[in-house]
Structure formats: structure tokens, C-alpha cells
Image 1 (tube, rainbow, N blue to C red):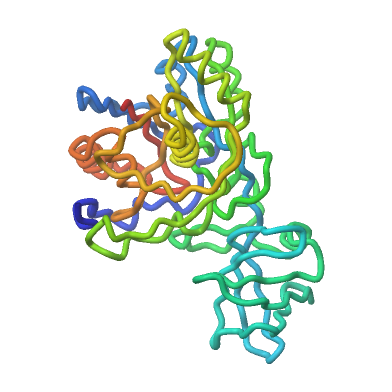
Image 2 (tube, rainbow, N blue to C red):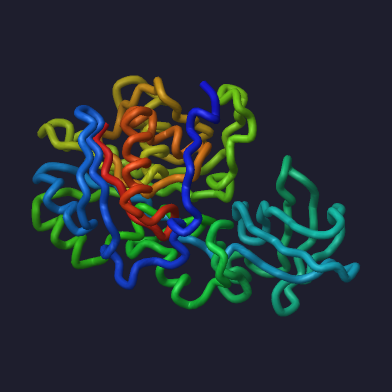
Amino acid sequence: MRASDFDYELPPGLIAQHPPATRGASRLLHLDGNTGSIEDLRFADIVSLLRAGDLLVVNDTRVIKARLRGRKDSGGEVEVLVERVLDANRALAQVRASKTPLAGRKLILGRGVEAEVLGRRDEFFELRFEEGVLDVLAREGEVPLPPYITHVPGSDDEARYQTVYAKSPGAVAAPTAGLHFDPPLLERIRAKGVGFASVTLHVGAGTFQPVRVDDVSQHVMHSEWYDIPQATVDAIAATRKKKGRVVAVGTTALRALEAAAAIREGGIVAGAAETRIFIVPGFRFRAVDRLVTNFHLPRSTLLMLVSAFAGSDNIRRAYAHAVAQRYRYFSYGDAMLLDR
């Protein structure tokens, strides 16, 4: 399998730079992975595609304002993107600077907050902040918009690059399929008899990393932390018993569920763990029947995931259709509902 098999041409003008005026005003492409049929809808039409007894599983991670700007104690400018909060005062981060900061050096961030470089862990730096990491980020940080969104983050991004059900702080990228839901739409879905459950997967910046080798088997997947409550495991079991469908809202919810299902044959395991699960065509799905997702970058692991879920040929046709119909792409863009 080659990364070039998952490439496609995307006019730059289709990359959404801002969210729609209101949540739920986006478009929805419904792709049936069994028949290959494609349907153009509005996102609010998702209610008609769900039925009583289905279960929506969302990722309740909360995006932190993970980007900090400042200088090294030697004077050079520095930009820090926190990848993961390790404990109250320590974090792993990407650090951009003219010269790599060595262990023991201090970074002066925001309006004077000090962070000491403790050392390296692969491509990340381990930093120790003089104050609580989450407090510093909330006060001094910027919303970590993806690299393909070119405007400076503003107050609108603080609200809209966050799901309405976000609860557990720790993500440095939004679980973007969830950005389409607002409270009235969620109430309409509940009123139809659809259940809700949640997982937590803290999305890392690695989600934007391209596959840099053409031989897909040589790609090293980034690690992400997830947690699945026992209540969610029980809700999925009850859904299966009454022949309902498990609908993952976003590739992150799917990754958490499938990673947990792979631990033990015959059921999803509750609890917290790290996963490097790499889902490509040929993967055997155990947990998820339907997937709500946005459109993904060329040659990305997430494009490989949706190709595994709905079929590579189906996804190629659907993406070509979406380009021709001028759907909006990526984090602030339109959505798809995929049937496995």
C-alpha cells in the first residue's frame, strides 16, 4: 500500500478558513459504504438518517490554548506548542527557535512566565513551568488552529474551535466532526430515541502530520491518550442487544473505540490507555457501524482510516464529487456520514 494511493487534488479555495455562521449550517455528504451511493444533504438532515436505538459516541475532549510565544533567556524568539500536559507543571511541547534550546535553559513565555527545558523526548521537549500548565495556557495561550488555517486566532475561534459538549481539557486539536452539533440539534436527536455516550481522546498535533514515506507499512503512528468509561461500554452493549447502530462522531472517537475493542476479542475494554492504532484498508472493525467525519488531508492517516471504513474506491468517488460540488474541506469545513 502506497501513500500516493491516498492523494487527491484539492483547490486551495475549498479549504475552509472560518466556520459557518452558525453550527449545523454546514453541508453533509452521506456515503453508503455498501452500495456506494452518494447523497447531498444539510448537516441538520442527520436526524433523518438516525433511528431510535442508535447510539452516538462523542469525544468530550476540550481544546486547550496550547500555543505560546516568547523568547529564550538568551534573547532569541521562540514559539511553543504544548503537545501533552504530563502533570500540574510539566508538559511535552514542540519548540520552534533559531537554535535548539538545551536542557537547563529557560524560556520566557507570554507576559513573563518561565519554563525550564528539562530535555528531549523524541521530537518533543519536556518543559517545567513555574506555574500550573493549564493556568498558564488559559491566561497566555492562543487557540492552536491547524496550519492550513491562515488567520490569527480570535475570540470567535475560542468559541467555535470547541465542541458544545467539550469537558476534559487536554487536546491541541479539535475533534472537528463534533463542531457541527449545537444544543437544539442534539435535543432533536435525543427526542428521536437516539442514545448518547462519550469517550475522551486528547487529540495531538500529530494528527496533522503527513505520511512522509510512500510505503505505508513504514509509517510510525503518533501516540494518543484515551479513556473509555464503563458507562459507555455498557451503552454499546445495550445498543448491540437491541440491534441499534454505534455511530462514532469523529475519527478520534472511532480510534478510541477500536483501540479498546482490539485489546480483548469480543468486547470493548473500559479504562485509560495509550494508542498508536493505525487503521488502513483491510482493518477489521469491531466497534463502530457508522462514522460522522469531516474531509481529510491528502496522504493523511485519517484519509486512510475513512478509506478502510467505507472502501477506498467509494472514498475516491465521494471526494471527487465533493470537490466538484464545492464542499468546504478540513477542520471548519463540511461533514460526511459514512456507513461501513
